[in-house]
Picture (cartoon, rainbow, N blue to C red):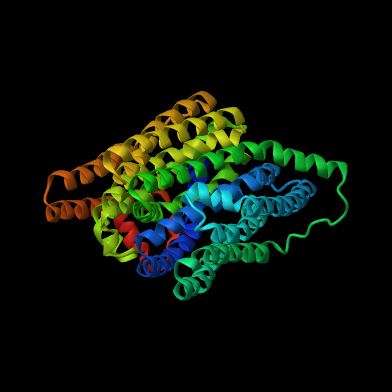
Amino acid sequence: MSALKDTNDSQSYRQILKSTTLVGGSSMINVGFSILRNKAMALLLGPEGIGIMALYSSIVDISQTVAGLGISASGVRQIAAAGGEDEHEILRVVTALRWASLFLGIAGALLFFAFSVQIARFTFGNDEHASGVMVLSLAVFLQVVAGGRAAVIQGTRDISSLARMSVLAGFFSVVIGLPLIYFFGARGIAPSLVAAAFSSFATSWWFSRQIKVSLASMSTAMVQEIGALFKLGVVFMMSGFLTMGSAYAIRLIISSESGIHAAGLYQAAWALGGLYASFILQAMGTDFYPRLTAVAFDSVECNRLVNEQAEVSMLLAGPGLIGTLTLAPLVITLFYSADFREAVDVLRWICLGMMLRIVAWPIGFIVLAKGAKAIFFWTEIAATAIHVGLAWLLVQMFGVAGAGFAFFGLYVWHSILVYWIARRLTDFRWSAQNRRLILVYLPLSALVFGAFEILPLWQATILGLAMATLAGLFSLRVLAGLLPQDMFPAAIRPLIQSIRSA
């Protein structure tokens, strides 16, 4: 029995690492595209141009979230819940998802275009950017339709296709978007965002085209399926609206208090703070969520998967976040320019918040997998209120750095809340190994952060690099012990064996 359990655990860790490697590998390639794109745009546009782009992006994100009515997320859950056993049910969900996303994309783009002048006035205080906002209606349509197609691939857990989609979309957004910025300057920002949305649409269409759907008229069953997508999707839509809305509100708070220049600084710190953690968080949403949904009825199995996902996530993210926190000035200059140096303090606070986010996110998926709509909704309401409220208070007190502190404060509160909720839904408990990891990485991050507040820069940097190196070696040793040797290339197996026995 024990041998069977060890085998199952190894297979689970293997699956987590495989999906994280695929999604993370594509994310790391996109990091290269991000370096090129961010550096070029920072040099061409400066902090103010980056601030305008951040506000444009927030507008599109909110609009496509509302227009999509959450059916992409609910479609992933519906397909994953079928477990691949009922092909007819999956085909019905896919057909409903595609028709609904096409209709919602058209309706959302038309409404966005009709109110674009009012949106521009509310965001920027004048009509100067109204034409740019009008152009963004195309991005809303493309993102909604692309989301419906990507949901099919995610629901069937075709991770390799999702990884290739991500890389291709990132590549084409750079190839098409950068020339637009180069030739048209700030006037090219909106078209570059449309180009990025088109890249996502084209890649999602290409990789999902082999899944054929029925073009017959809507049957009663199909109408019921669309109704089911909307019923759960509205909850996801409200969650997405709150998340995107809080990001939009915080950028408005910063720009109103300190100008669009400061909003650009915050955007730079936000993008870099999530850069390393993003591949782990994306892997959770891409593969872990469908896997967890499939076993949501079994609380013991559900808790085991969450603990395993959290363990691997902390081991992978911890060293990188500590390294980013340490090298924040260099990272800011490398990815943007010296004009963004004021974003260093914001980036460090965001790194602390991201460490907590890595810990809390796997637990939060329990609520989604269980379909606890009311709990999920009110948790998101509370998180939005806390985040925006803290930002409104702290930006007035500390300037743009207060927005980073607000993000950290949000996840201090949110981590405690989701753990309490999970205890009541599935009797969740942290495993002994995860308790040890939490007691290693969180204090270590706080130590490095504090060092930059009280020590000279060179001393704090040396300490941070030493801690990041030790954390990396520790993570490597633990990961080497979790996985069977056949997962590693033959050339490095002796090294892995020596690490295990060290």
